[in-house]
Image (cartoon, rainbow, N blue to C red):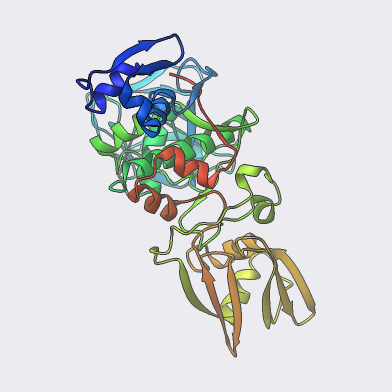
Length: 416
């Protein structure tokens, strides 16, 4: 905390003839100026109490950033691997060195079915169905054209296909996530808010035994890293949000359309105060704030029947159970043999999340077509990214952004 003398110096009045006496807690001003200007005294005392106040508290839960395992490929037939520094390939089970070199040009990795699913690199069998690829230089690993930090694990998946996993510390992971989830040229305070949100979400999932993948958080390795982004994310190192001392699923989305949604209505769970939904007046500049889509009934039925083959001759759909953000919790589908209600978010995912942008929609029958008129892009829960961007542009700090979208959450630094 700054001393009273320092505050006065910063205010540019250090030569005004003040006589200052400080106690251990509060400094008192003894001057005619202060007596005659009580408002000024209040301002100084406010600065004394707030200047230097930490943005979060510390509570060591890890000695260092924990490791994450992020699925990059799942049950693929092949993948191309390259390493742009000295490297080693080790057996995933016993650590035996299988191959090493100064670098590795782009080379196909396959599973040889004739040898029980053993891995082969450039057609040469490695004698195992799981390997670790470790580079001497962090970020020198390349898989399918994308560079990654940490080490890459290649192994035979449960269904016999090729699975690739990036094992790296959570800070390196969040750096890649932020650049993939939010434009890296946005305001620093918005990017900090995104980093803390993503870190909270990732560590919550890890703590609940979830294997992270592209369905959870967008992650494109080092592709969108910049020196500026590295510095911004590092300023939030170890900071997460807690509610009642626990991590929670800090959901986020592109555009809420005017009001974020109650998580319990969208996902049927996580009905805690930070995820109840709040009014948002900050995402109106998003091109997804309002939208219209027309989908043929034939195309809609084809998508729905992939999961529900008995729903034939669909002739009407209607949103049901709206929350405070006007996102539907269910969709009623009327078809030849009756009607069926399904989770609205499932309905959206069946039609395609980039086609039906949100579950906050109205429906109009257009004969062979159904017109969806909606607001926002995404599930609508938690942080509205476009809202955060506007708040930061208007001068809000990351703390103010996150307090807005996650009311009641506490900021805690859980490792150094």
